Length: 83
Image: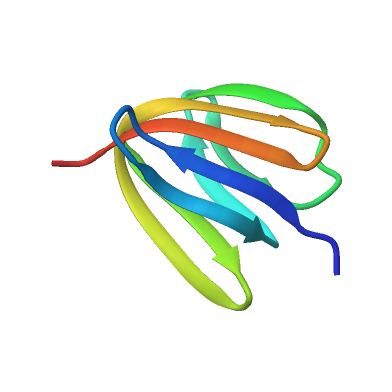
């Protein structure tokens, strides 16, 4: 099964680094779901939740906002976790 390579990082820590089959979150333009093979994207993220599905497990993170970039099945999310 194809996977995404994901890095969810803040200024101080790596919140999640690993493979994923699916990511869902809100962008300033609306909801987005990302699977392997998705078109490249750069998006601004408002405060909300990032859900990363890996191996059938949902990893949920509350963020205060940030940015998401996707290119060639590699996703980097720069975000600050909710305090």
